[in-house]
Length: 85
View 1 (cartoon, rainbow, N blue to C red):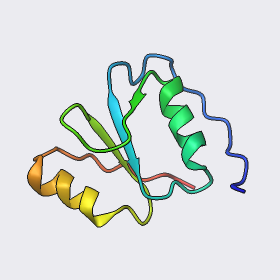
View 2: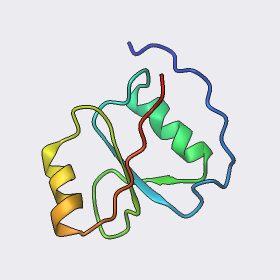
View 3: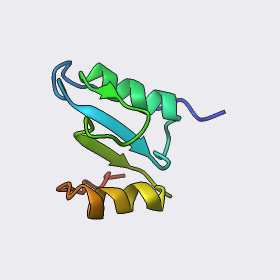
View 4: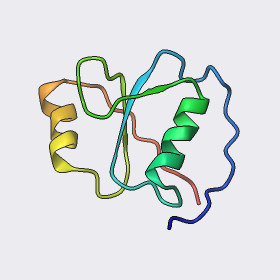
């Protein structure tokens, strides 16, 4: 069982209209908890990469196929944000 994540305060419209895919492991969060943070910010979770996806969250051990797809095939501009401990 994943540890209970720390509460994250987000604006309910911060990610309004964004279609999001999570790949890899998000430290301290189960997949379901990480998805809920994004949903609370207004995002819609997609289960796989597709033309509707506008944001990809790359966690630790992110699948190389998804990373490669983002970088090569889609030409998606990625912004890397490091979590501060």
